[in-house]
Image 1 (cartoon, rainbow, N blue to C red):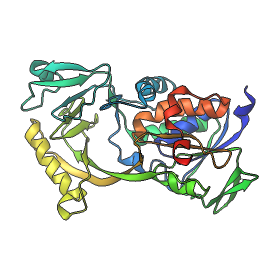
Image 2 (image 1 turned 45 degrees about the vertical axis):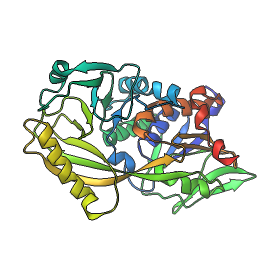
Image 3 (image 1 turned 90 degrees about the vertical axis):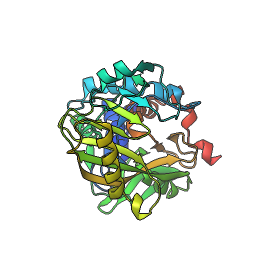
Image 4 (image 1 turned 60 degrees about the vertical axis):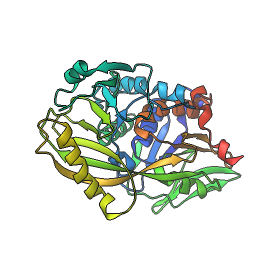
Length: 350
């Protein structure tokens, strides 16, 4: 076994990115401890639409990374018990954002009606991406952490990080209310909390909290077969009928609060889908996504202090599988992954 693999590694954050890192690191033989301020998947992971896609509008500085995202989830579902993405494809039309993937095909109204028979008025054409899918992000996080535990990892929830122990310019542990946890390497994967943790180490990372609206409805099963993304709605449906929707955050005006948007979106869904009259809002909230200022993930070592690796990104669910795979390889073997070169924290810290 590689000598590096026996290192004690603390992953801060038990969202889907932290869980993927923990699993991949543990599978490479590292001694992994996950430290989470709240509960498992209690941050943005729990409010994610969780659409697994490789689409991008315009030039993509992380094309190599994004291009491996679906394959990484495909590999994980064969190795992680309880990890069950649904590969049901996605239809997009009327959004005018230019997102395409290599597998995109343009389909006409007859094919659209076959793919989504409950659409009241199928558009003349749409972009169909058959390889795309979605997952239950909370269940996936629990599955990844369970698999990591089976490999010897430990997870500590309700354990905020109070500070770091640093000796001779190197982080040697994490300070918590119950004491110091010693480590050879720290991985910051705390979503929107990552910047504050880096600040404790003297690193200023421009990662802001980007709001989005997450909606969940009770609905009759079978209204939506895959993912529908249009100018009117972005929806998908679980096997039990639960319908998920995502909307842009507008402002904090009363008419744009999550509950009000949930009602408006419900009306749009009823207008678009046959049989949707009975849908009822069940949950609506604002999710805060970790958004680097240039839109590119922040993945790699902090230059200011040794022994600290950062993983902060949007879209986190899409990239969690491939980033866990590649970042764990860098940490364990010391060999850089070329697909992560555009993501280095040093671009902000020169």
